[in-house]
Image 1 (cartoon, rainbow over the protein chains, first blue to last red):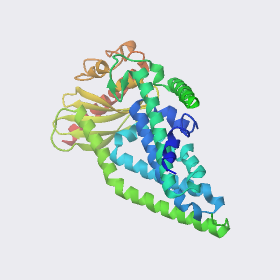
Image 2 (tube, chains in turn brown, cyan):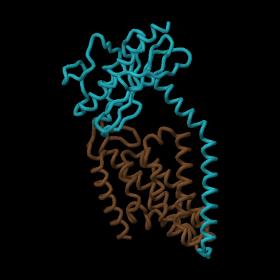
Image 3 (cartoon, rainbow over the protein chains, first blue to last red):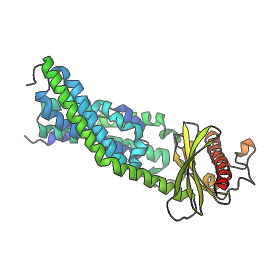
Image 4 (tube, rainbow over the protein chains, first blue to last red):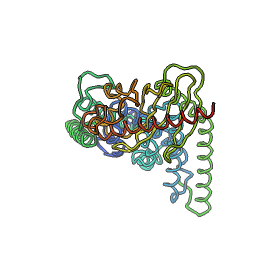
Length: 194
Length: 188
C-alpha cells in the first residue's frame, strides 16, 4: 500500500485546524495577514517534521513513565534552534511572530503527533506524517490569513487591490473567530459530502 | 518495546536526552550568534540612516540620562543625533528612533517597535500624512503636541492616544538632544 495517505490524511481527514481544532492560539493570533499565517505554518511544520523523526527513533528506548518529559525536551530543543535560526536569517519574520515561536513548544499539534503517531510508527512514516500535518496547518493558516487580509486590509500577501481601510474587525481578534468559524463550516460540509 | 520504567532507566534516559539536547542548542547558539548580532546591527544602522541626513563613517553610540530616564543615542559626524525614545502608547511601549540634525530640526522619525492596535494606532508606521509632519519640524517654532492638546500636530484619525505617545516620544528626544548639545559644548 502506498504511503502517500500519511501525507494526505494530515491535511484532509486529520486537518489540525478545521477537523482536530488543535493549536488554536497561534491560529487565531498570527493570521492577521496571509504572509504571517504562512510563516507561522512553516515554522510549526519545521518543528513537527524534526520532532516526529527524532521521537520515532528514540521511542523504543524511552521508558514509559518519562515519555512526556523526554518528548517535550526534544520539541523544546527544536523550537529553540528554530528561534535562533529565524533571529539570524529572517529577522523580519521573527519580529512579527515574536512570542508565538517559543509557544510552538506547547502547541498541542506537535505533542499530539509525537504521542499519537510518531512513537508507534517507523521513521519514514513519521516524517511523512509530519509533512502532512505540517502542510495541513500551513495551508489552513494561510487560507485564514488570506481571507482576513482581503476583508481587513483589502490586500493579499501585501499586494493591495482594494483602496482604503477595509473592515477593521477582521484584523483583530473577533474577525479571527468569525473567519475561523465559517471556514470550519465550509471545510466540514465539503468533507461530509465526500 | 519501550524500556522498563525502572529508576535507573528513567534517570539514564532523561540525563542522556537532556545532555544531547543542550549540546544541540549550544551548537545552534554558536552557529547563529554572529548572524544574529549582524542582523541587529544592520537594523540599527538602517534606522539611523533613515532618520538622519547622509553621513560618512560609523555613528558613535552613547548613553545619557535625562529626567531619570536612560536614553541610547547615536552621534553621526556632520549629520546630527539619532535618539532612541520610548513612551507608553495605547497597547504598550512605543519605541521610536528620532533623528535631529545639527540645526536642532527633526530630520525624520521611525518606529522601532510598537504594540498598537492593528488598523488604528499601528498606522503610526504607515500614515504618510502623520509621519511627514515631523520631517523638518523645528521644535523652537512649533509645539510638539497634537491639536487636541493645543499643539501643531494632526493626530491619526481615531488614534489620539497613539499620536500623543508618538509626539511625547519625539519631544523627549528633543529634550535629550538639548542636553547633549549643552554637554557636547563642554567637551569640545
